[in-house]
Image (cartoon, rainbow, N blue to C red; front, top):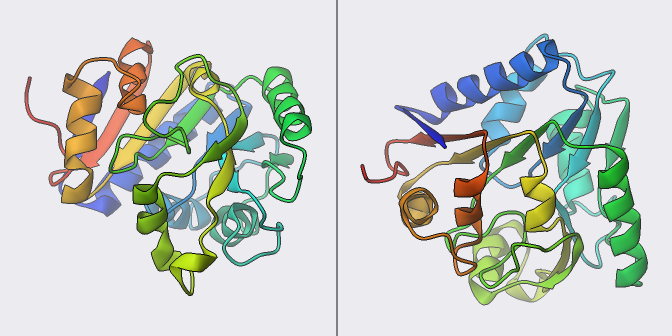
Amino acid sequence: MEVKVFDSVTEASREALELFQSALNDGAKTFGLATGSTPEKLYELMRGSSIDFSQATSINLDEYYGLASDHPQSYNYYMHKQLFDAKPFAKNYLPDGTNENPQEERDRYNQIIADNPIDLQLLGIGENGHVGFNEPGSSFDSHTRLVDLTDSTIQANKRFFDSEADVPKQAYSMGLADIMSADQVILMAFGAKKAWAVNQMVNGPVTEDVPASILQKHDNVVVIVDREAAPKES
């Protein structure tokens, strides 16, 4: 696990952009993508760059259960606004938040991942150490499924909705085994609120209580952080 510390979010995001471009140059075809506030600067830089995803495939980590793709707070809507409209991919895959049959959606999405092995997976990290919506206690062997969101995650996401009551309480999420199947992983984290989770991920025990800690067992992980989120030196 390589940790890179930067003075600003912009500098950190430029590094991530360079890693995406390098992956493309090396023949990467499938990119696992993340949402939330952490990658917004990266996506902004991508929109203003010459990077070309027109021959690539994207597979997103997750989607809120119950939200249609055109809902302003759906991750499908977010991805089109933040990246896809400016930098189209050959194919985009996201979980279908309107599918009320969790087993059917699980099987559909797991087949998509099996058919499109992920070359580079982008991740953020939650304050409690979750990645995707794999909350503490998630099995390291987990695959795409419908998950219940913890109260801390709901609280963290309520700023995006009109009220806490509007925040979905469940989501479809890739599992930890899906994330670990990627050839390369980039995890980005910014701000003091992420410092505990980043430190536990890098220096703590590998435990399902901190889902991101499983990345210690991956052969190719780059952790990109600002100084506030940087882990303690081990």
